[in-house]
Length: 166
Figure 1 (tube, rainbow, N blue to C red):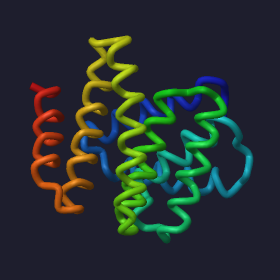
Figure 2: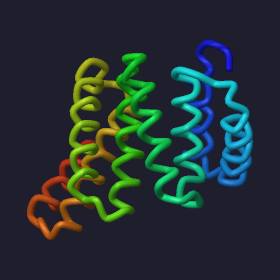
Figure 3: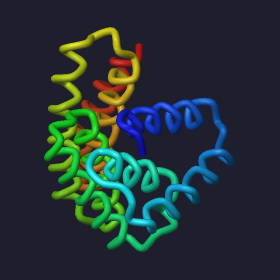
Figure 4: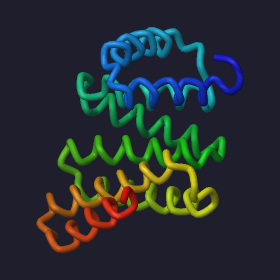
């Protein structure tokens, strides 16, 4: 992938997700699977491809594969000092850990990710995509707390996420 291709892939995925083009997303997921199998990618291009593939097709993969890919993407984004990518990988890893029933570690990933998104949204407050992602982190934290039986704290997180979008 060419330089900046990771950002182009992110924009394409977000556009198709937000416009309900689910068939196109699935086709993209299949193409990314072939590209990932080719071992031609590295750095942030590999990381973004892993995360995008994971968001599209992760529920169809064994959880251990999904977790390993999320951890690899997280490491690559951290090495590249790509804050948004790191937050995205932490969200994916958190969702994966929660699906495994590992609520404690999922919550840790969500909390680390929300700190990044708070920094990013504070630096560019009019970025609506980052505001939406910050809201999603509150929702993810709320779901993990709810699953742990911490209903009052969960409700506060759900409300915080909702208030960002209002």
